[in-house]
Length: 88
Image (cartoon, rainbow, N blue to C red):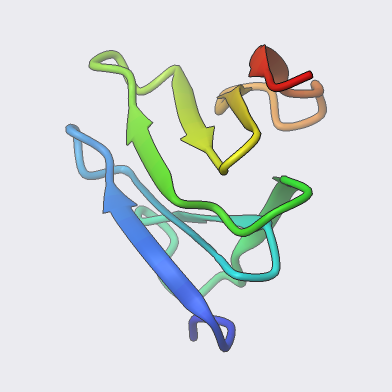
């Protein structure tokens, strides 16, 4: 199930991934090929996640809060996100 406070969810273009984020800033990822598995927490923003989109090749998930934009590598969940923009 989805955690409480889930504000935004998005399906990848291929249908493999389902991502969700919300007020707590955590980014959750489900593998739709394994629907009974728990969601993975990829990481978090310091504020609630306001927006997200998958790249067309499903290699990255891009997320944004009010202060930053990040890109998350989906095939390498052990890697940190890349900060694309950070408000100073």
